[in-house]
Image (cartoon, rainbow over all chains, first blue to last red; front, side, top):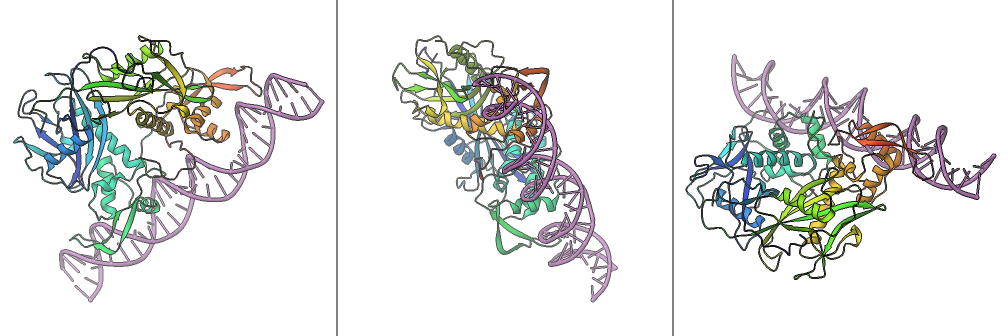
Length: 239
Length: 239
DNA sequence: CCTTTTATAGTCGTGATGACCATAAAAGGG
DNA sequence: CCCTTTTATGGTCATCACGACTATAAAAGG
């Protein structure tokens, strides 16, 4: 049918699901909630909820994220639509179409119990076990998307606090990609990309670590990376 | 709310919208339908329709595409989910959430009148005037997505017949990007990428053109392009 | 036979990158 | 106070990919 003018339409429930990533102690973590009700009671799942009648999926995602993390001042936040999952049997109760989002947070706020008593927790990405519904697929897709966007955008700063060292920025890449990077080469690449980072004059991180203190940088105005910063040692990467 | 267990949910209508691209006479064309009913009666729009209760959005998109183009043997077809458009006021009649898809066809089949008497037509992308609903946005997003994927995937062969010359392949890039490319350099890049194209032994295109006949190639097994084939002369590209 | 047209082959300089090596500036331990 | 360890930062060098460009080959049309 054309222009969707014909035939009656069936009602669907529309939800948002969020894959919220952050870095804790040098490991990639994802925000999960424990389901209190059937189906999948006791299983872990991605946070999410129904889209309300007056809001877009983006607005709903932002609202759900604020409810889960307590972050209403969502300044340091990257939120991006991933794709929509619409298999007819993805929810055994009813027909639910879910718009999935990927979100990045710099410092991990404790997932203070939101509007709801169910348990919410930061879980290391690698041990994010079998999840409810098709959330394993969503989570894997979100991880792949984030990893890919690190290559050709300046997204990595979304994982960092307002001021950060180049070592911390490199740690973002290494943690998300699961690979090691050469420090001088990474430095050269980042500093030679105009607008990626800008130095904070005269500031250096003195935090208890050993070794020479590192200079501090802020995120720059650029959003794209040209040429891209490719993940090492892979021949064919998925489209 | 977490895990969408709480509160009643409002019903939504879920549709698919398709941005179907093809190449006709060296120009990028998009498939449009003329709306016969309100709202936007008489306006052009992207083809699409309601998702049926038992099908996924992908299945619905494939079904709508078959209805519009008469192509049921969708062998030479690239269909890809773009994103979901869910602004509350995007359809004045009711709450409609639309999952948009981008599709590519090699040879342009005549958009035989499908299940519906409304007019369907291939329109040059540049003259695809103001469309109904938010379809201008969807179309622009789809074009940007296709252009971007030409850079780092082997998607261009989806615009080509089973056997094609490198000149035809280059024309895909030039038409979608709207730029000119250096022929020897394009050749070198394509041929030096393993699995992008494979030669058809001893075959050459003799079709009435002047000049030396070109060798024929088939699409190879590769899907990704490393390093990418970047669009010329742009400093910052959107993420 | 000569011009036009298109395909194909090569050349050359530049810039980006990977693999290194070297130095600087801090902490900690003897 | 010296020396080792640790981390940040600076640099070299060969290779590779790419843009710009020139040259040759093979067809059609007059």
